[in-house]
Length: 353
Length: 274
Image (cartoon, rainbow over all chains, first blue to last red; front, side, top):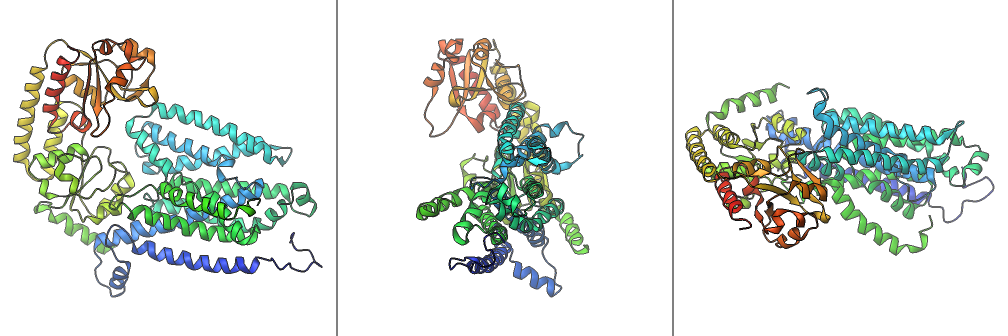
């Protein structure tokens, strides 16, 4: 809408066909890793065998049933949703802040979610037993993430106008505050709790259950559906807030929806999987380098690529040292870091996104 | 819904025949299983199970508090013995859903706790007589070690690490505190529970006569550096160059070797600095 005004012919560097082909390719890649994720794991369970048995009405061994339907399937769904949510949130934040270094952490979600999780791990024992059971950590992480975003939004909004700069600086202050509170809790924590904290920070999909999915999936899905509707607005915002306003983009509403979308998606993702870094910043970058900054294609492709990469990382995490498994945050960073550097070095010319 | 129920019933009816594919989670639990002569029933262990050496050939299902459900299921276990705090709870729930018996062994840092652990493991493995025999042996050895450790109590400070020059010391309700007591010593740090960093002044005020640390195989001997630490340098322990290092699992495991560890520690405490 913004890039192409009537009367100006589409330039020959139009990358939309390429973006559409990318979407198709990514969708196929996602389907492929999804099948792989069901088929690969420490236990020798074969999904084909189980499905064949089910179709033929034969008895399926209880262990195979648990492995396939209670472990691998919820993990697959969780990986897809978390990966897509983190990548899309990253893309939206980068568009909103007009800064390629923005990540979902900027709206205070990560700091708040971390504080919530730490509180639940350290102080959970003080709650009446069985109040939340082992869902205390995800619930607290989500509430923490959401609450800190709302506080930050309140701080940055004056007379119906949200200042992105205030939000950025306020986020730093709030992050420091959350870090200090977390520090107090870390000091109070005992040995076992410290280890739990460390592992939580590294992220994992190992705790994926249908119950967690039922709680977190609606939020992530809602955000994923809402995000593409922001695309035109974010494209306009690339010209600057004033220019965007003058070409008829409801800037304030765009900001509100974008921030709430990111808080919901990232909050839910972090709550169920812990701190998985890197996906939110790298996926949008890769796609921008490949198919350009148009958010209409970017947001959809980011969801597909984020989901694909996280499922792939999870497969690696659970296979590489089986029967034990690595925290997934280690895998995403070890694989993603060098790859991203390589792309940057190769394409030095297009760094000014 | 009905079929898994039947399967669960079928499995629940099985244990007349004792489990022979056991996963042991927790260093001291594995030691007890082997000490009961049941080591050949183990099919996997966790990362903290490093003794005896024969178990290091078994597949490692990961860190005790971060077990992967599919990893544990992949070794096809029919019994899981886990120390207190093994998890995460999601994994335990899934293992129970797969109808695999999951027995949690209570933990503790005194004589009674060691014997209770042995009894619980023996019961789960269906070898109560061996359990009673081992518990009697270990109990007698602990009594003998306690007798040998009688005498004036020395003030001991257990230093977990000196990372970055900060002393991480053991307070009350820790395995280190327990073993120091059993060896006839007195924990110099009683102001807090668990392992916490101490300020330099608190180290001076605690005035330990002996510094106790874990020895890691292959790691450099850092005794000289620790004794030269500005805060520790002011303590009686540094003056007498009294620093004792012992293997972590041996010292803090509270398993069948604990009586021997108590003896070694009380000997070392008596000798240290003299």
